[in-house]
Length: 514
Image 1 (cartoon, rainbow, N blue to C red):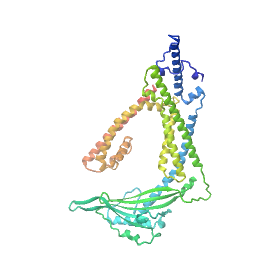
Image 2: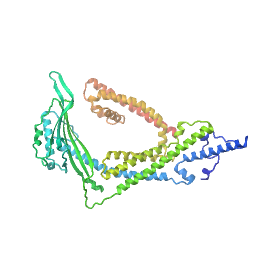
Image 3: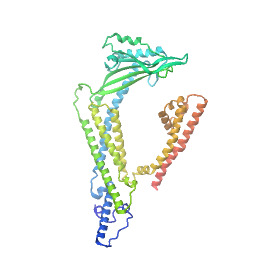
Image 4: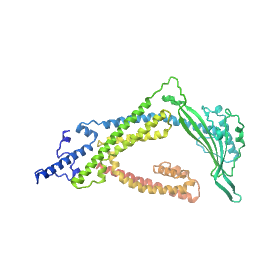
Protein backbone atom coordinates (compact mmCIF):
# COMPACT_ATOMS: atom_id res chain seq x y z
CA UNK A 1 0.00 0.00 0.00
CA UNK A 2 2.84 2.38 0.87
CA UNK A 3 4.60 1.60 -2.43
CA UNK A 4 1.53 2.45 -4.47
CA UNK A 5 0.87 5.76 -2.75
CA UNK A 6 4.50 6.86 -2.63
CA UNK A 7 6.07 9.01 -5.35
CA UNK A 8 9.14 6.87 -5.80
CA UNK A 9 10.46 7.19 -9.33
CA UNK A 10 11.12 3.47 -9.53
CA UNK A 11 7.40 2.55 -9.22
CA UNK A 12 5.48 1.44 -12.31
CA UNK A 13 6.49 0.99 -15.96
CA UNK A 14 8.41 4.04 -17.17
CA UNK A 15 7.80 3.42 -20.86
CA UNK A 16 4.21 4.69 -20.60
CA UNK A 17 5.46 8.22 -20.19
CA UNK A 18 8.34 8.50 -22.62
CA UNK A 19 11.81 6.99 -22.66
CA UNK A 20 11.92 6.62 -18.89
CA UNK A 21 15.21 8.44 -18.46
CA UNK A 22 15.44 10.33 -15.15
CA UNK A 23 15.28 14.07 -15.33
CA UNK A 24 17.98 16.11 -13.69
CA UNK A 25 17.25 17.08 -10.13
CA UNK A 26 19.87 19.76 -9.78
CA UNK A 27 19.01 23.36 -10.15
CA UNK A 28 19.35 24.35 -13.78
CA UNK A 29 18.62 27.86 -14.91
CA UNK A 30 16.27 30.08 -13.06
CA UNK A 31 14.10 29.07 -10.10
CA UNK A 32 10.80 29.20 -12.07
CA UNK A 33 12.23 26.76 -14.59
CA UNK A 34 13.21 24.40 -11.80
CA UNK A 35 9.72 24.61 -10.28
CA UNK A 36 8.11 23.89 -13.67
CA UNK A 37 10.34 20.86 -14.14
CA UNK A 38 9.50 19.58 -10.69
CA UNK A 39 5.77 20.07 -11.33
CA UNK A 40 5.98 18.12 -14.59
CA UNK A 41 7.70 15.25 -12.81
CA UNK A 42 5.01 15.22 -10.13
CA UNK A 43 2.27 15.21 -12.78
CA UNK A 44 4.00 12.39 -14.65
CA UNK A 45 4.43 10.33 -11.50
CA UNK A 46 0.80 10.87 -10.51
CA UNK A 47 -0.37 9.77 -13.93
CA UNK A 48 1.92 6.76 -13.80
CA UNK A 49 0.39 5.67 -10.49
CA UNK A 50 -3.11 6.08 -11.96
CA UNK A 51 -2.18 3.95 -14.96
CA UNK A 52 -0.61 1.29 -12.78
CA UNK A 53 -3.65 1.10 -10.56
CA UNK A 54 -6.13 1.19 -13.47
CA UNK A 55 -4.62 -1.87 -15.16
CA UNK A 56 -4.39 -3.91 -11.95
CA UNK A 57 -6.54 -6.99 -11.39
CA UNK A 58 -9.06 -6.96 -8.51
CA UNK A 59 -6.69 -9.07 -6.41
CA UNK A 60 -3.77 -6.68 -7.02
CA UNK A 61 -5.97 -3.70 -6.12
CA UNK A 62 -6.91 -5.44 -2.87
CA UNK A 63 -3.25 -6.06 -1.98
CA UNK A 64 -2.25 -2.51 -2.98
CA UNK A 65 -4.98 -0.48 -1.29
CA UNK A 66 -7.03 -3.00 0.64
CA UNK A 67 -9.98 -2.32 -1.66
CA UNK A 68 -12.62 -5.02 -1.46
CA UNK A 69 -13.45 -6.55 -4.88
CA UNK A 70 -17.16 -5.72 -4.74
CA UNK A 71 -17.54 -5.86 -8.52
CA UNK A 72 -16.00 -9.34 -8.62
CA UNK A 73 -18.31 -10.55 -5.88
CA UNK A 74 -21.29 -9.00 -7.65
CA UNK A 75 -20.39 -10.78 -10.90
CA UNK A 76 -20.10 -14.13 -9.12
CA UNK A 77 -23.50 -13.55 -7.47
CA UNK A 78 -24.95 -12.59 -10.85
CA UNK A 79 -23.69 -15.78 -12.47
CA UNK A 80 -25.51 -17.86 -9.86
CA UNK A 81 -28.86 -16.07 -9.88
CA UNK A 82 -28.98 -15.61 -13.67
CA UNK A 83 -28.33 -19.33 -14.15
CA UNK A 84 -31.05 -20.23 -11.63
CA UNK A 85 -33.46 -17.87 -13.40
CA UNK A 86 -32.69 -19.48 -16.75
CA UNK A 87 -33.24 -23.00 -15.37
CA UNK A 88 -36.62 -22.03 -13.90
CA UNK A 89 -37.71 -20.41 -17.15
CA UNK A 90 -36.44 -23.40 -19.14
CA UNK A 91 -38.56 -25.84 -17.15
CA UNK A 92 -41.65 -23.70 -17.67
CA UNK A 93 -40.93 -23.06 -21.35
CA UNK A 94 -40.34 -26.76 -21.97
CA UNK A 95 -43.88 -27.57 -20.86
CA UNK A 96 -45.28 -24.83 -23.07
CA UNK A 97 -43.40 -26.04 -26.15
CA UNK A 98 -44.30 -29.67 -25.43
CA UNK A 99 -47.97 -28.76 -25.08
CA UNK A 100 -47.96 -26.93 -28.42
CA UNK A 101 -46.13 -29.72 -30.23
CA UNK A 102 -48.34 -32.49 -28.85
CA UNK A 103 -51.50 -30.60 -29.74
CA UNK A 104 -50.22 -29.93 -33.25
CA UNK A 105 -49.52 -33.64 -33.68
CA UNK A 106 -53.01 -34.45 -32.38
CA UNK A 107 -54.61 -32.00 -34.83
CA UNK A 108 -52.76 -33.58 -37.75
CA UNK A 109 -54.02 -37.03 -36.81
CA UNK A 110 -57.54 -35.68 -36.25
CA UNK A 111 -58.04 -33.53 -39.36
CA UNK A 112 -55.70 -34.95 -42.05
CA UNK A 113 -57.02 -38.08 -43.69
CA UNK A 114 -54.56 -40.99 -43.54
CA UNK A 115 -51.92 -38.92 -41.77
CA UNK A 116 -48.65 -40.66 -40.84
CA UNK A 117 -45.84 -39.13 -38.81
CA UNK A 118 -42.90 -37.77 -40.81
CA UNK A 119 -44.58 -38.68 -44.09
CA UNK A 120 -45.57 -36.09 -46.74
CA UNK A 121 -49.31 -35.64 -47.25
CA UNK A 122 -50.45 -35.29 -50.85
CA UNK A 123 -53.22 -36.39 -53.19
CA UNK A 124 -53.30 -36.93 -56.93
CA UNK A 125 -56.98 -37.18 -57.93
CA UNK A 126 -59.97 -34.89 -57.62
CA UNK A 127 -61.90 -37.50 -55.68
CA UNK A 128 -59.12 -37.80 -53.09
CA UNK A 129 -59.03 -34.03 -52.63
CA UNK A 130 -62.79 -33.88 -52.03
CA UNK A 131 -62.49 -36.71 -49.52
CA UNK A 132 -59.78 -34.87 -47.60
CA UNK A 133 -61.92 -31.71 -47.42
CA UNK A 134 -65.01 -33.62 -46.26
CA UNK A 135 -62.97 -35.64 -43.74
CA UNK A 136 -61.47 -32.54 -42.10
CA UNK A 137 -64.83 -30.76 -41.78
CA UNK A 138 -66.65 -33.86 -40.47
CA UNK A 139 -63.91 -34.41 -37.89
CA UNK A 140 -64.25 -30.79 -36.82
CA UNK A 141 -68.00 -31.14 -36.41
CA UNK A 142 -67.66 -34.30 -34.30
CA UNK A 143 -64.59 -33.11 -32.33
CA UNK A 144 -66.13 -33.28 -28.80
CA UNK A 145 -67.11 -36.93 -29.37
CA UNK A 146 -63.85 -38.20 -30.90
CA UNK A 147 -61.03 -36.15 -29.38
CA UNK A 148 -59.09 -37.29 -26.31
CA UNK A 149 -58.27 -33.66 -25.46
CA UNK A 150 -60.72 -31.14 -24.07
CA UNK A 151 -61.25 -28.57 -26.81
CA UNK A 152 -63.82 -25.82 -27.26
CA UNK A 153 -64.97 -24.16 -30.48
CA UNK A 154 -64.30 -20.47 -31.11
CA UNK A 155 -67.26 -18.82 -32.81
CA UNK A 156 -67.35 -15.71 -34.95
CA UNK A 157 -63.82 -15.97 -36.38
CA UNK A 158 -64.75 -17.20 -39.86
CA UNK A 159 -66.52 -15.62 -42.82
CA UNK A 160 -69.91 -14.08 -42.06
CA UNK A 161 -69.41 -14.67 -38.32
CA UNK A 162 -69.01 -18.43 -38.65
CA UNK A 163 -66.63 -20.73 -36.75
CA UNK A 164 -64.99 -22.41 -39.78
CA UNK A 165 -64.07 -21.00 -43.18
CA UNK A 166 -63.65 -23.13 -46.31
CA UNK A 167 -62.04 -21.13 -49.12
CA UNK A 168 -60.67 -21.82 -52.57
CA UNK A 169 -58.34 -19.42 -54.38
CA UNK A 170 -57.99 -19.56 -58.15
CA UNK A 171 -56.79 -17.54 -61.12
CA UNK A 172 -59.19 -15.55 -63.23
CA UNK A 173 -59.17 -16.50 -66.89
CA UNK A 174 -58.76 -19.78 -68.73
CA UNK A 175 -56.06 -22.37 -69.44
CA UNK A 176 -56.21 -24.63 -72.50
CA UNK A 177 -53.22 -26.99 -72.87
CA UNK A 178 -54.78 -28.46 -76.04
CA UNK A 179 -54.18 -25.28 -78.00
CA UNK A 180 -51.15 -24.24 -75.90
CA UNK A 181 -52.99 -21.08 -74.91
CA UNK A 182 -53.90 -19.37 -71.67
CA UNK A 183 -55.51 -16.15 -70.54
CA UNK A 184 -54.77 -15.53 -66.84
CA UNK A 185 -55.23 -12.56 -64.56
CA UNK A 186 -52.49 -12.79 -61.90
CA UNK A 187 -54.86 -11.26 -59.33
CA UNK A 188 -56.59 -14.36 -58.01
CA UNK A 189 -60.21 -14.69 -56.84
CA UNK A 190 -61.41 -16.22 -53.57
CA UNK A 191 -64.66 -18.06 -52.85
CA UNK A 192 -65.48 -18.90 -49.22
CA UNK A 193 -68.29 -20.49 -47.25
CA UNK A 194 -68.76 -20.44 -43.47
CA UNK A 195 -69.77 -23.33 -41.23
CA UNK A 196 -70.78 -23.63 -37.59
CA UNK A 197 -70.70 -26.67 -35.26
CA UNK A 198 -73.97 -28.54 -35.12
CA UNK A 199 -74.29 -28.00 -31.37
CA UNK A 200 -74.28 -24.21 -31.83
CA UNK A 201 -76.24 -23.83 -35.06
CA UNK A 202 -78.68 -25.89 -37.08
CA UNK A 203 -78.44 -23.66 -40.11
CA UNK A 204 -78.83 -25.46 -43.43
CA UNK A 205 -75.54 -23.91 -44.57
CA UNK A 206 -73.63 -26.57 -42.66
CA UNK A 207 -74.13 -29.03 -45.54
CA UNK A 208 -73.00 -26.62 -48.26
CA UNK A 209 -69.42 -27.86 -48.10
CA UNK A 210 -70.49 -31.09 -49.82
CA UNK A 211 -71.81 -29.11 -52.78
CA UNK A 212 -68.71 -26.98 -53.31
CA UNK A 213 -67.21 -27.22 -56.79
CA UNK A 214 -63.48 -26.70 -57.11
CA UNK A 215 -62.06 -25.07 -60.22
CA UNK A 216 -59.20 -27.48 -60.69
CA UNK A 217 -57.90 -25.98 -63.94
CA UNK A 218 -57.21 -22.63 -62.21
CA UNK A 219 -57.01 -23.72 -58.55
CA UNK A 220 -54.21 -22.25 -56.41
CA UNK A 221 -55.12 -23.71 -53.03
CA UNK A 222 -57.91 -24.73 -50.72
CA UNK A 223 -57.81 -23.63 -47.07
CA UNK A 224 -59.82 -24.62 -44.01
CA UNK A 225 -59.48 -22.16 -41.11
CA UNK A 226 -60.85 -22.49 -37.59
CA UNK A 227 -59.84 -21.97 -33.96
CA UNK A 228 -59.98 -24.14 -30.86
CA UNK A 229 -59.49 -23.41 -27.17
CA UNK A 230 -57.67 -25.56 -24.60
CA UNK A 231 -56.18 -25.28 -21.08
CA UNK A 232 -52.69 -26.50 -20.17
CA UNK A 233 -53.23 -27.87 -16.66
CA UNK A 234 -49.82 -29.56 -16.38
CA UNK A 235 -48.28 -26.25 -15.26
CA UNK A 236 -49.70 -27.00 -11.80
CA UNK A 237 -46.73 -29.35 -11.40
CA UNK A 238 -44.44 -26.29 -11.25
CA UNK A 239 -46.82 -24.46 -8.90
CA UNK A 240 -48.01 -22.19 -11.70
CA UNK A 241 -51.50 -21.11 -12.67
CA UNK A 242 -52.60 -23.00 -15.85
CA UNK A 243 -52.53 -21.13 -19.15
CA UNK A 244 -55.43 -20.79 -21.56
CA UNK A 245 -54.54 -21.43 -25.21
CA UNK A 246 -56.22 -20.50 -28.46
CA UNK A 247 -55.08 -22.56 -31.45
CA UNK A 248 -55.54 -20.96 -34.87
CA UNK A 249 -55.50 -23.93 -37.25
CA UNK A 250 -55.14 -23.70 -41.01
CA UNK A 251 -55.27 -26.71 -43.31
CA UNK A 252 -53.68 -25.86 -46.67
CA UNK A 253 -54.12 -27.92 -49.84
CA UNK A 254 -51.51 -26.42 -52.12
CA UNK A 255 -51.86 -26.62 -55.90
CA UNK A 256 -49.65 -23.69 -56.93
CA UNK A 257 -47.35 -25.87 -59.03
CA UNK A 258 -50.25 -27.43 -61.03
CA UNK A 259 -48.09 -30.53 -61.30
CA UNK A 260 -50.83 -33.06 -60.66
CA UNK A 261 -49.92 -33.36 -56.98
CA UNK A 262 -51.66 -31.33 -54.27
CA UNK A 263 -49.62 -31.02 -51.08
CA UNK A 264 -51.57 -31.00 -47.80
CA UNK A 265 -50.26 -29.43 -44.61
CA UNK A 266 -51.59 -28.24 -41.27
CA UNK A 267 -50.36 -25.05 -39.59
CA UNK A 268 -51.05 -24.32 -35.94
CA UNK A 269 -50.50 -20.88 -34.39
CA UNK A 270 -50.92 -20.88 -30.61
CA UNK A 271 -51.63 -17.81 -28.49
CA UNK A 272 -51.57 -17.76 -24.70
CA UNK A 273 -53.64 -15.58 -22.40
CA UNK A 274 -54.70 -15.47 -18.79
CA UNK A 275 -57.64 -17.68 -17.89
CA UNK A 276 -60.77 -16.04 -16.52
CA UNK A 277 -61.36 -16.58 -12.80
CA UNK A 278 -58.71 -19.29 -12.25
CA UNK A 279 -59.27 -21.41 -9.17
CA UNK A 280 -56.91 -24.16 -7.98
CA UNK A 281 -57.96 -25.79 -4.71
CA UNK A 282 -55.30 -25.58 -2.01
CA UNK A 283 -53.15 -23.20 -4.08
CA UNK A 284 -52.24 -19.86 -2.57
CA UNK A 285 -51.09 -16.89 -4.62
CA UNK A 286 -47.30 -16.81 -4.65
CA UNK A 287 -45.07 -13.95 -5.75
CA UNK A 288 -41.76 -15.69 -5.03
CA UNK A 289 -40.81 -15.99 -8.71
CA UNK A 290 -41.75 -12.39 -9.46
CA UNK A 291 -39.66 -11.24 -6.47
CA UNK A 292 -36.72 -13.35 -7.66
CA UNK A 293 -36.97 -11.87 -11.18
CA UNK A 294 -36.99 -8.35 -9.72
CA UNK A 295 -33.92 -9.26 -7.64
CA UNK A 296 -32.11 -10.50 -10.76
CA UNK A 297 -33.01 -7.30 -12.63
CA UNK A 298 -31.79 -5.16 -9.71
CA UNK A 299 -28.45 -7.01 -9.45
CA UNK A 300 -27.94 -6.71 -13.22
CA UNK A 301 -28.82 -3.00 -13.10
CA UNK A 302 -26.22 -2.51 -10.35
CA UNK A 303 -23.67 -4.47 -12.41
CA UNK A 304 -24.49 -2.34 -15.47
CA UNK A 305 -23.92 0.88 -13.52
CA UNK A 306 -20.60 -0.33 -12.09
CA UNK A 307 -19.33 -1.50 -15.48
CA UNK A 308 -20.48 1.75 -17.07
CA UNK A 309 -18.65 3.70 -14.38
CA UNK A 310 -15.47 1.70 -15.06
CA UNK A 311 -15.71 2.41 -18.79
CA UNK A 312 -16.26 6.12 -18.07
CA UNK A 313 -13.21 6.19 -15.80
CA UNK A 314 -11.18 4.50 -18.52
CA UNK A 315 -12.27 7.12 -21.07
CA UNK A 316 -11.36 9.97 -18.70
CA UNK A 317 -7.96 8.43 -17.94
CA UNK A 318 -7.39 7.90 -21.65
CA UNK A 319 -8.11 11.59 -22.29
CA UNK A 320 -5.68 12.59 -19.53
CA UNK A 321 -3.04 10.23 -20.92
CA UNK A 322 -3.42 11.60 -24.48
CA UNK A 323 -3.29 15.20 -23.30
CA UNK A 324 -0.14 14.55 -21.28
CA UNK A 325 1.65 13.07 -24.30
CA UNK A 326 0.43 15.88 -26.55
CA UNK A 327 1.31 18.88 -24.36
CA UNK A 328 4.18 17.60 -22.22
CA UNK A 329 6.00 15.24 -24.57
CA UNK A 330 4.84 16.51 -27.96
CA UNK A 331 3.84 13.02 -29.12
CA UNK A 332 0.61 11.46 -30.30
CA UNK A 333 -1.00 8.25 -29.06
CA UNK A 334 -2.06 5.55 -31.53
CA UNK A 335 -5.62 4.23 -31.61
CA UNK A 336 -4.36 0.83 -30.55
CA UNK A 337 -2.97 2.30 -27.35
CA UNK A 338 -6.12 4.33 -26.79
CA UNK A 339 -8.33 1.24 -27.06
CA UNK A 340 -6.37 -0.38 -24.22
CA UNK A 341 -8.32 1.88 -21.88
CA UNK A 342 -11.68 0.50 -23.12
CA UNK A 343 -12.20 -2.86 -21.47
CA UNK A 344 -14.11 -5.11 -23.89
CA UNK A 345 -15.15 -7.40 -21.03
CA UNK A 346 -17.12 -4.55 -19.46
CA UNK A 347 -18.94 -3.95 -22.75
CA UNK A 348 -19.80 -7.66 -22.89
CA UNK A 349 -21.14 -7.53 -19.33
CA UNK A 350 -23.19 -4.41 -20.08
CA UNK A 351 -24.83 -6.12 -23.08
CA UNK A 352 -25.48 -9.19 -20.92
CA UNK A 353 -27.03 -7.04 -18.17
CA UNK A 354 -29.30 -5.25 -20.64
CA UNK A 355 -30.52 -8.56 -22.07
CA UNK A 356 -31.13 -9.96 -18.59
CA UNK A 357 -33.07 -6.90 -17.42
CA UNK A 358 -35.33 -6.88 -20.50
CA UNK A 359 -35.75 -10.67 -20.36
CA UNK A 360 -36.61 -10.55 -16.63
CA UNK A 361 -39.43 -8.06 -17.17
CA UNK A 362 -40.77 -10.11 -20.08
CA UNK A 363 -40.62 -13.19 -17.82
CA UNK A 364 -42.59 -11.31 -15.16
CA UNK A 365 -45.18 -10.47 -17.81
CA UNK A 366 -45.36 -14.12 -18.86
CA UNK A 367 -45.81 -15.32 -15.27
CA UNK A 368 -48.52 -12.71 -14.69
CA UNK A 369 -50.21 -13.91 -17.93
CA UNK A 370 -50.07 -10.48 -19.56
CA UNK A 371 -47.46 -11.51 -22.16
CA UNK A 372 -46.79 -14.70 -24.12
CA UNK A 373 -43.43 -13.88 -25.74
CA UNK A 374 -41.74 -17.13 -24.73
CA UNK A 375 -39.38 -17.16 -27.71
CA UNK A 376 -38.17 -13.58 -27.22
CA UNK A 377 -37.71 -14.12 -23.49
CA UNK A 378 -35.79 -17.34 -24.13
CA UNK A 379 -33.47 -15.64 -26.64
CA UNK A 380 -32.71 -12.76 -24.26
CA UNK A 381 -32.16 -14.89 -21.16
CA UNK A 382 -30.20 -17.54 -23.06
CA UNK A 383 -27.90 -15.00 -24.71
CA UNK A 384 -27.35 -13.13 -21.44
CA UNK A 385 -26.45 -16.35 -19.62
CA UNK A 386 -24.03 -17.26 -22.39
CA UNK A 387 -22.30 -13.88 -22.13
CA UNK A 388 -22.19 -14.08 -18.33
CA UNK A 389 -20.44 -17.43 -18.39
CA UNK A 390 -18.07 -16.27 -21.14
CA UNK A 391 -17.22 -13.36 -18.86
CA UNK A 392 -15.89 -15.86 -16.31
CA UNK A 393 -12.85 -16.27 -18.57
CA UNK A 394 -11.84 -12.69 -17.71
CA UNK A 395 -11.33 -13.59 -14.08
CA UNK A 396 -9.51 -16.81 -14.95
CA UNK A 397 -7.16 -14.77 -17.14
CA UNK A 398 -5.79 -13.11 -14.00
CA UNK A 399 -3.94 -16.38 -13.35
CA UNK A 400 -1.16 -17.13 -15.80
CA UNK A 401 -1.88 -20.86 -16.05
CA UNK A 402 -5.56 -20.33 -16.88
CA UNK A 403 -5.38 -17.62 -19.53
CA UNK A 404 -3.94 -19.79 -22.31
CA UNK A 405 -7.22 -19.83 -24.24
CA UNK A 406 -7.64 -16.05 -24.24
CA UNK A 407 -4.02 -15.35 -25.11
CA UNK A 408 -4.05 -17.93 -27.92
CA UNK A 409 -7.28 -16.58 -29.41
CA UNK A 410 -6.00 -13.03 -29.21
CA UNK A 411 -2.76 -13.96 -30.99
CA UNK A 412 -4.41 -16.10 -33.67
CA UNK A 413 -7.50 -13.94 -34.27
CA UNK A 414 -6.13 -11.60 -37.00
CA UNK A 415 -4.69 -14.45 -39.08
CA UNK A 416 -7.79 -16.59 -38.55
CA UNK A 417 -10.10 -13.80 -39.77
CA UNK A 418 -8.02 -13.23 -42.91
CA UNK A 419 -7.91 -16.97 -43.57
CA UNK A 420 -11.68 -17.34 -43.08
CA UNK A 421 -12.37 -14.55 -45.56
CA UNK A 422 -10.39 -16.39 -48.24
CA UNK A 423 -11.98 -19.76 -47.39
CA UNK A 424 -15.47 -18.19 -47.36
CA UNK A 425 -15.08 -17.09 -51.00
CA UNK A 426 -14.38 -20.68 -52.08
CA UNK A 427 -17.16 -21.99 -49.81
CA UNK A 428 -19.77 -19.61 -51.26
CA UNK A 429 -18.74 -20.59 -54.78
CA UNK A 430 -19.39 -24.24 -53.99
CA UNK A 431 -22.73 -23.30 -52.38
CA UNK A 432 -24.06 -21.47 -55.42
CA UNK A 433 -22.74 -24.09 -57.83
CA UNK A 434 -24.25 -26.98 -55.86
CA UNK A 435 -27.60 -25.24 -55.54
CA UNK A 436 -27.91 -24.54 -59.27
CA UNK A 437 -26.64 -27.87 -60.61
CA UNK A 438 -27.56 -30.44 -57.96
CA UNK A 439 -30.65 -28.75 -56.46
CA UNK A 440 -33.18 -30.42 -58.79
CA UNK A 441 -31.69 -33.87 -58.20
CA UNK A 442 -30.66 -33.94 -54.54
CA UNK A 443 -32.83 -33.30 -51.46
CA UNK A 444 -29.94 -31.69 -49.55
CA UNK A 445 -29.32 -29.07 -52.26
CA UNK A 446 -32.86 -27.71 -52.72
CA UNK A 447 -32.12 -24.29 -51.15
CA UNK A 448 -29.03 -22.21 -50.39
CA UNK A 449 -29.43 -22.70 -46.65
CA UNK A 450 -29.69 -26.48 -47.09
CA UNK A 451 -26.62 -26.48 -49.34
CA UNK A 452 -24.61 -24.58 -46.73
CA UNK A 453 -25.73 -26.96 -43.97
CA UNK A 454 -24.88 -30.00 -46.10
CA UNK A 455 -21.41 -28.72 -47.04
CA UNK A 456 -20.63 -27.72 -43.46
CA UNK A 457 -21.60 -31.25 -42.36
CA UNK A 458 -19.30 -32.71 -45.01
CA UNK A 459 -16.39 -30.61 -43.71
CA UNK A 460 -16.91 -32.20 -40.30
CA UNK A 461 -17.15 -35.70 -41.78
CA UNK A 462 -20.90 -36.12 -41.32
CA UNK A 463 -23.27 -37.91 -43.74
CA UNK A 464 -20.67 -38.41 -46.46
CA UNK A 465 -21.91 -41.75 -47.74
CA UNK A 466 -25.57 -40.70 -47.55
CA UNK A 467 -24.85 -37.53 -49.52
CA UNK A 468 -23.28 -39.61 -52.30
CA UNK A 469 -25.99 -42.28 -52.38
CA UNK A 470 -29.01 -39.92 -52.29
CA UNK A 471 -28.06 -38.40 -55.63
CA UNK A 472 -30.95 -39.00 -58.03
CA UNK A 473 -30.35 -40.18 -61.55
CA UNK A 474 -30.60 -36.98 -63.56
CA UNK A 475 -28.48 -38.10 -66.47
CA UNK A 476 -24.90 -39.25 -66.86
CA UNK A 477 -23.53 -35.73 -67.18
CA UNK A 478 -25.12 -34.53 -63.92
CA UNK A 479 -24.01 -37.68 -62.07
CA UNK A 480 -20.39 -37.24 -63.21
CA UNK A 481 -20.50 -33.57 -62.21
CA UNK A 482 -21.87 -34.46 -58.76
CA UNK A 483 -19.01 -36.89 -58.15
CA UNK A 484 -16.37 -34.37 -59.21
CA UNK A 485 -18.10 -31.66 -57.16
CA UNK A 486 -18.28 -33.70 -53.93
CA UNK A 487 -14.81 -35.24 -54.20
CA UNK A 488 -13.10 -31.91 -54.89
CA UNK A 489 -14.98 -30.12 -52.09
CA UNK A 490 -14.22 -32.81 -49.49
CA UNK A 491 -10.58 -33.07 -50.52
CA UNK A 492 -10.04 -29.31 -50.60
CA UNK A 493 -11.74 -28.39 -47.35
CA UNK A 494 -10.87 -31.39 -45.16
CA UNK A 495 -7.30 -32.03 -46.26
CA UNK A 496 -6.23 -28.44 -46.93
CA UNK A 497 -8.50 -25.71 -45.56
CA UNK A 498 -9.35 -27.39 -42.26
CA UNK A 499 -5.75 -28.50 -41.71
CA UNK A 500 -4.43 -24.97 -42.37
CA UNK A 501 -7.04 -23.53 -40.01
CA UNK A 502 -5.88 -25.81 -37.21
CA UNK A 503 -2.26 -25.04 -38.04
CA UNK A 504 -2.86 -21.30 -37.60
CA UNK A 505 -4.18 -21.78 -34.07
CA UNK A 506 -1.48 -24.34 -33.24
CA UNK A 507 1.20 -21.93 -34.48
CA UNK A 508 -0.12 -19.14 -32.28
CA UNK A 509 -0.17 -21.50 -29.29
CA UNK A 510 3.41 -22.65 -29.93
CA UNK A 511 4.55 -19.02 -30.20
CA UNK A 512 3.01 -18.19 -26.84
CA UNK A 513 4.45 -21.22 -25.08
CA UNK A 514 7.99 -20.48 -26.27
